[in-house]
Image 1 (tube, rainbow, N blue to C red):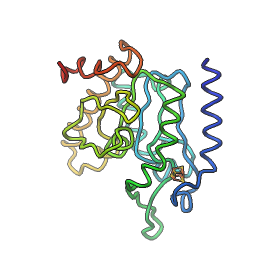
Image 2: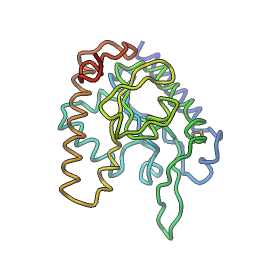
Image 3: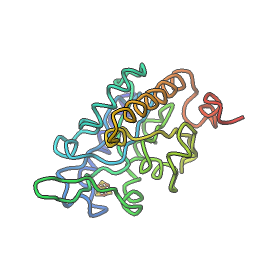
Length: 219
Ligand code: SF4
């Protein structure tokens, strides 16, 4: 079964490498598809590959990815039991001299690229799907989701499954104040700890509201 899932993911990866469904492929180096074991308990969904991910061809290997790895380890989540991917598979940026500055994907790009994310979820069927930030939440929920209001809550995904919302680790890196950064990081680790506990105990994704009850946000 796991071999079958792995083969399907590899087939999707090859297909996505040729994707030209929106203009973002033109300036990016390559498609950056998801990565992780086919029997992963949790899928973490970020926004899009960053500068380093675009060059290397792997998700979550830049500065935000390194912080994410550290937070996962502190929360007791084995990164090797997770699958990490992005809502949009090509790097969107604008050039400023030699720099390539991240640019947020628009609703159209998120919507077009969603086919790859949904295919990954359909194949892997994890226990829990976690949106890291607003772009991932929008893709998964099929509507804009305010992270501040929905953080720590479950959200109903467009395919009827349940997911969890927290911040994207890059938002922590952008905080200018060191004290604020540390406080935000501690909250992020707390979210991850709850996610790990829930995934360890829960039924497969689709059990309605189980995580929200675990967090006390549903009756
Ligand atoms: S961003 Fe997504 S939809 Fe657009 S070309 Fe890349 S893989 Fe295809």
